[in-house]
Length: 214
Image 1 (tube, one colour):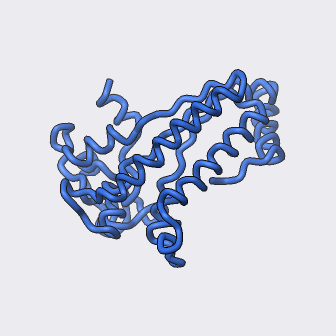
Image 2 (cartoon, rainbow, N blue to C red):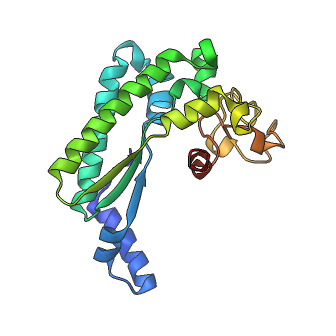
């Protein structure tokens, strides 16, 4: 997670306030903050870490470090005046195209062990979020469960109008992400609407997932 400091947050908010003739304090307190974290930490920094972190630290221990970072992050935002915060759970990590490439598919096409790590993390996330709500007066903290919707999409894509869930649209559909993914990337599909995942880590727009379950 990117470290939140009072200096960089206030500086940015003051810029916005100046341009809109608003009050920086009210912008901070009235804003809605949405946090999504953990996926790249596990995939990039744990499972495929060049230092083989997973050899010396269990997934459970690693998730404890992430949860501590999350708790500190929320408390820092709260101290700056934030009161309305939403956080997404981890997706089914074992169903991400990049994870399948690294860990290999299992029954149902996903890596069960990686999915179990995500479920364990999400349980800690929910428990920690409840503790934060009890200890930080006035905090409205909501956890959005994206695990189950994405699991359903990844394992039963045709039921939701998709044709492909094992490979992503971008490039080879196996590992590419970030700047390596754009409409001009070699191998990128021309029918992105038929793919659950845009790149090796990211699904299509989250709001579309919500619509499916409304």
